[in-house]
Image 1 (spheres, helix red, strand yellow):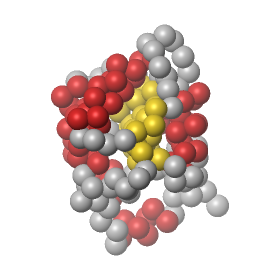
Image 2: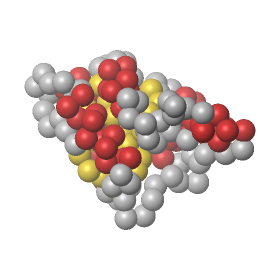
Image 3: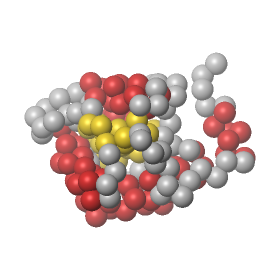
Length: 150
């Protein structure tokens, strides 16, 4: 079951260390006819991941994009930034199985990948499983309901 919503673009963001992998993801989305909105960065020149993570998070929270895909060198910095937003459940995934579980158990709405630590082939598997795995609900919904800070 695909998590893609009709007429809503996938949101993309990266820093310089994730730029090349983001370009690869764009090619994957183009091949599948999936629309996207790129929040930057737009080159491999050094930049700060937060400058691109925050606009992506705001767009996902507002329903303008769904889901999001974000990439930085380790995945950690952009993931931490995204998760500062109350409506974001960003999951750092470096294997296909983590991508599947992030959707099934955590209803992740942003996929984060470590651009310096996985191959394009692994990224393709992770993106495909993330986009095509549904949320199981049930006991997992109860846990997700407890995530927001009170």
